Structures are given as structure tokens and as C-alpha cells.
Length: 386
Image (cartoon, rainbow, N blue to C red):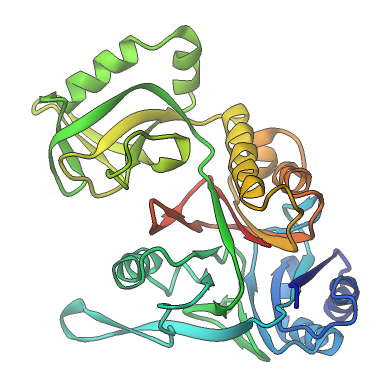
């Protein structure tokens, strides 16, 4: 039995009216099939009294499982509501697949250690969606743990970007939660991850020959800072113009590949340099043998990167339209990056042949690079459902 997906978006100011309107549109996309999973993204005044919104979503869809979060802005097909009050609902009938909702938290133990509770074992699953509160859930640390325990499992999602006066707004089942993370484990449901980091590689590839933690001592056998300076000086005029918008470093995660393309690099910022020692620090742990390459970000490269990443997924689908998609876009994208509305929503709709899609503007995006789970920024991550 095929997967069916429906979406709905409403900007109605009344929480109940908005949920019923968006829920009815999402239900119509299921073509009479049951709703196995609903994912809800709410912004603006809906976060003041989210219980009313959640109750109406259940009334409209009667979902077997439900998760969601507060957002700075929400996304629907060809539409991005970057600010104000709105709700976007993504509903799925999963055919023979199942969705198991969970609420995860980290309990503090002695000596600063923590215990992860509520997170299901992901080994053997088809993938998972994770929506976390950045103030109460150590997402980076949890992703490192999950990368060690369940590598190569598709894990996508984002950090909640909308809060109420009392803290986070997370949805699970019929409950509104104010801490931790919510998500769903998916079984027997194919989910293709798509990660667009929105940056273009420039200059040559360089091999790390000495490093410790997040500090690169040497590149190609020479002081790292000296090598980077010479690399920048050798850039073309067009590349130098890109660098004016901010210099980034792409780090290859999977060093077993014979050659590397744009999506193989984990893009991170340069966070410091010491002229006395020639060392540079990046916002990720590195080790000797890894390949790095300078990257730069602008609207044109971000647009091209997203469309190329989606094209790869469509090729994997044999050119057939997917059932739908979930889109998690950084809240630094939108008009601020592209100087026009609805960019990522339009790009996803155009690339995926108008398959129903919904999502939100996140305070950080979760997606894999080289089979490892990472938290990104200025990224668009997409979960594509065949």
C-alpha cells in the first residue's frame, strides 16, 4: 500500500479555526486513508495557548501519532510564512509502515554527566524525525551519541525556533511539552535524506597533516594559517567576492571516497587563528588525513546547491514524483538570504514535481553528512518520502 501525504497551512488568527482549516486541507491529501502521523508547526499567537490548537488538530485528523514544535515561521507548498501567526500541518498515511512517537530528555547525573531517556533504539529503523528545544536538549551531544550507536540511519529535523512565555512548545500526542525533544521512529517507511548546506567550494583541496580537537596545526605539511592565506590570495576575482560574505571551511567526513563532491563536505565556520603559531580553529573536531576546502555562501550558491541536492534525490526515484516531503530551513534563510519570498518552498515544489511538502524555519537543522548526524546552520534539510 503506497504512502500518501497531505499538507495544510493557515494564517487564521484563531487557533481552533486555523487548525481545522489546515487539518482539513491535509486530510484531503490522504484521499480517505487514515492518518498515521501528523507533524504540526505553529508560530505567533498560536504559541500563547497551544492546547486549543492541538485539540483541533486531533479533531480534524484523528492521527495515530503526532509530534510538532513551535516555530519562528512555517512552510507549506510554494509558501513561507516567515513571521506572524500561522500553522502548517503535514499528515501521512504510511501504508504498511509505522510511526512511533517519543519524547526524549537528558537527565543530569553526578559530575556533569547526563543520561538520555525516552529516545527509542533507532537500529533497524527506516529513519527518524527529531524536533528539539535548543535550551533544554543537548542536540549536538545526542547526535554524536547516535552517530556512534546508529550510523547510517536517516535522521532529520530541526531545533524549535518558537517559544511561549513559559518556555519551549513541543507537541506529542495530545500533550504540550516545554522541554526536551520530540520525534518519531519510522519503520518500513522509506525516507531519503537531502542536505543542502548552501555553500560553494572554492580553491584547492588541502589535507590536514596535524590537528588536535578543533584546531588545525598544519595543512599540507605547512602552518595552517599560512597555507590558508596563500590559498585566499590565489583565488579568482569572482571567488574573492564570494569570500567577502564570510569564509567557511568544508571538511570531508568520509575519507574513504576516491574523490569528493560538494555534498561530501561538512561546512563549518572558522572560529579563530593564532598568527604566532599558525594554527586555526574551526567549529568541528578534525583529525590528520581529512581533506578540507574553503567554502563561501551566497544566495546564488545556496539556490544551486539546494536544487542540485534535490535533483540527486529525484534521480534516485527514477524521475517519479515522491509522495511528499518535510522541509527544515534555517531561520537565517528566507528573505534575508534570497531577497525574495518563498525561495526554499518553491525550489522544493519545483524539484519534487509539486509533491506536498511542509516544514518550518528552524534554529538549527539536523541532517547527515558522510553517514554521520550533524546539527547545521544556514542549511535546508529535506526528508523525501517515495
